[in-house]
Image 1 (tube, one colour):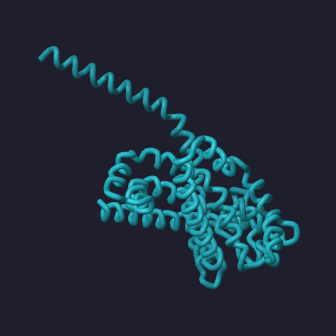
Image 2 (cartoon, rainbow, N blue to C red):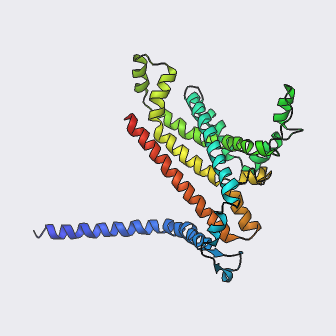
Image 3 (cartoon, rainbow, N blue to C red):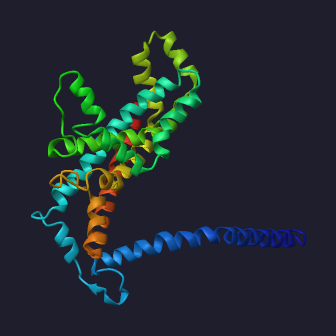
Length: 306
């Protein structure tokens, strides 16, 4: 008994020492997290119920729910077309990028020099948004653009991709999808390589063809990776605004105006920081709800196939 009590005391002392060491090592990260995430979020929540023109912290006036009433007014422009454009932009870009990245990743895993192919598809991601936007903006030009030049070569008249309200948003969606394929390809390629070959060998013994193998083996086993790519890409699409600034500035006639760009306009151009913060909170709720729906859908599909 006399040997057990000191041993327990020594163990507790060692655990306390380990705990202090752990908190000491974590403190810089926790401080960074608090200063650059928690405090700005709390400040944004405060601004959402306030009226502030920026710069002078002494002139922040409480506004209650006035900012939310303004942006959620059906007669306003935030719900339609801005929030609707945001959802269409995100859904369209994610759908195109996901389909293309699945096809590309599946092809890369069957080619030689896989590292080279992954690098080539990753290059758009390391290119600045300004460069990507300007290159595609030039390619979309009605007179001298590459795309219209190719259309004219086969007898199709030029298309005003970025100045026609009916084509502006789809045109920017294509650019967003193209720019985001690199990340999805890297992640999906890793997910495909993690699938054991024994599953495909068993499928071949059962007489499955390439399509059946892809649909019943690859996609179900790739579901967790697809969920991660879907959520991250969708959040990035909802938050995107730099590409809009470079290519269309929200035009023509608000056809490409999205929530991120409108928040930027309200805060830095019009000085309505309270309205911009309220928009940010509404967008956060939209992202949160859609993410939960995506998680629920994939979990339900997983239960059905298990």
